[in-house]
Image 1 (cartoon, rainbow, N blue to C red):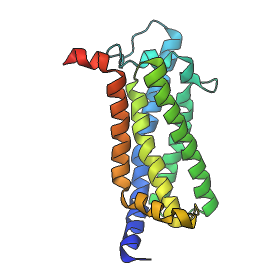
Image 2: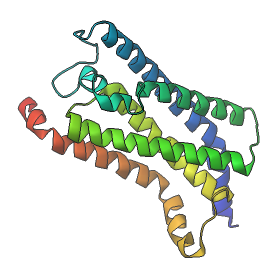
Image 3: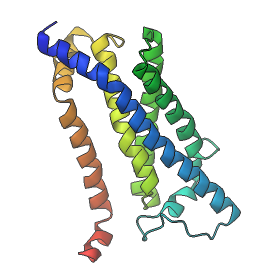
Image 4: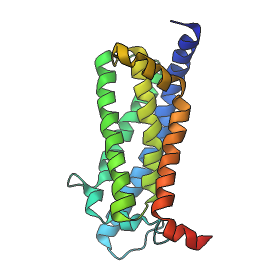
Length: 204
């Protein structure tokens, strides 16, 4: 292992707890607020939520849809449980805990589900519902680095085997990890700007 790669491994290992804790806390807070708003709307369907800012940025327009209860119960319940687990793992790592390979593989499966679900919700929100929920977007934002850096960590530690033909590609991803996250965010911002340009253009 080269010195540069070893230093990168150490840096990611040291920063991983903070990525999980900070991202998990932001995600958990957003999920709790969404759950409170959901209960509020159940009590009073005509209520105007604090995050109903304009015709495009409006939590109520999203929370009231069937996509907001994709599995038959409010989506924030998944977020509350999932982000609480992420925070717990981050705190355990910060305290020096060591986890076995099967644990990291299980966590990888969890974040794959999480990023897949978030991607589906992004599509539904932007192209089907036609409204943006600010707290949902916080969840989108934190899920990306949580998924990305857990995946990179598992690849670096060998918890996810890398086939020989893909080693160069994986090395490229590892080297440009920050650029990829930035591009990911820019793509989402670009999609939002394009989809709702009819409204944004009235504000200029």
